Length: 125
Image (tube, rainbow, N blue to C red; front, side, top):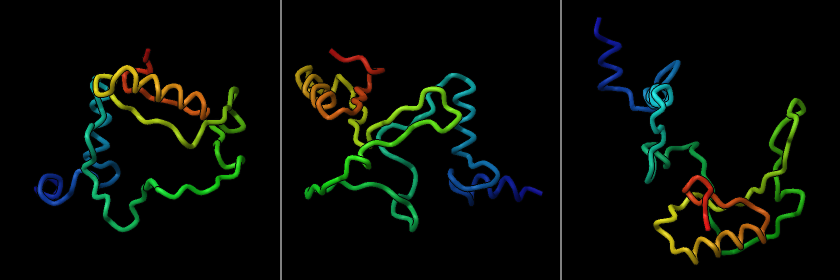
């Protein structure tokens, strides 16, 4: 019958199905063709559905003990495990920020001991 096609194209959303969703298949196909596999400017997921988790910024800072500021990346089998900061500066296009702004963010990241993803492959002045 045509039940699978009807469900695939008219009933299921892009992030439902088993064993893989249309969203997961599209990502694999894009990667196999060496094409971009990310979606900029937001998400297609329902971020208000029960069980969806995210982190909100707070205007009231709280004390974080030193032992909780970094997380170990790499398990017992890893030859070069490292501690990564939980706080980092996410990608922002260099073209969207002034050179001085990027330099200020780099300086702050260095002072704080965390990463700054410039959105330009890590290249910044």
